[in-house]
Figure 1 (spheres, rainbow, N blue to C red):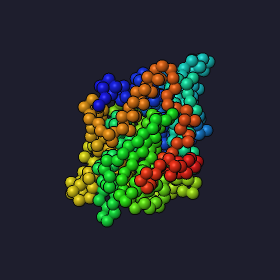
Figure 2: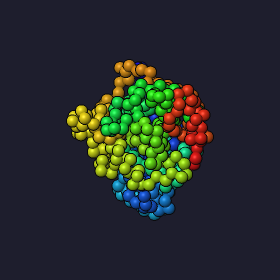
Figure 3: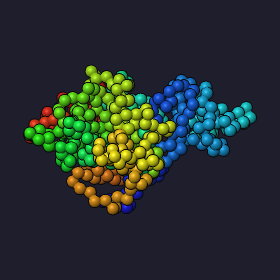
Figure 4: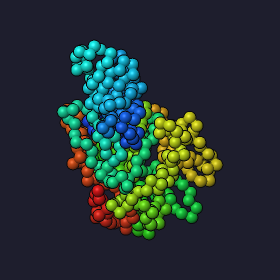
Length: 424
């Protein structure tokens, strides 16, 4: 269980909160690059860490991220005109560039110097891996942009998507860190094939703290002296990497396109989250075709036909995720279609912010407990003026995940050393 005051500390993300201050010390996703595809295109709303922001790509391709309120009369900048390297408020014509400088103030006399004294709140942006990143913390403490391996992979070797989740970021992320639940919530009856996690529903969890967060493994007994080992990486504050190179049937055969994948759970506010999903090829030989990626997305319940505007799932809290009791009886454990949708049903179903003081955690919750401890530690480190784990590229640029089969007693570090060495 978690003390109520610690639960508050880890779930509130607005300006001035401990966790919100921590998030602002990292570069975090603000949008997919495809949401701002063209220079001088339509601006988009970017609700992030309890702040209402607006993003636009200017005439030269630079992305601005501004407060969605003109400093004149607080009119919404979302309705602004994106033109000639600036976003112009349509209320009185005040125009701001990507850095937040007021470049035109047509409602004032031509000789007025007032515009030189006016700025709008802006945050720096950087594009990498198909994502627009932003840093919202103190400028003097800004680290270099992130250098995760999947960001470095060529566009042809990776794929991104985004989903909206109506719950606090922490319970969303903790669902991802929890490996034991996949033996149950994601239990699929596959005819003659054996879902790999059905063979062992109580995996052994081993965990090692690192300078970026922690590395952890789940080990499942396959019988016959064999084990299935999945290596995960938790990169602070809100990213998980996982191996996805082995078929879930337990046969030991490789997937058609071996990939690594993961998520970033980014708070919109205290009660809403955007989940950024990514996959990338195991090495330079593994291209990820877009049609293959969308097929995979459909298996998770977030394919093209599964989505509503705003990156929301058609199967959602309002319609009970289209729960099918006959499917639950005959096909899968939940009666809900899509691995991602199954997760959302359980995480959103807990309510916007779960009361962790009422939990009773077990041995399979080791990764969740460790993440909470690291986050609490990091909020206090930041309060003392120190840099949090994982903020600087040198701490995380070498990190990757993997999964595979081992003979019982073999050391995964040795057996998988080649695959755990970055390829991009």
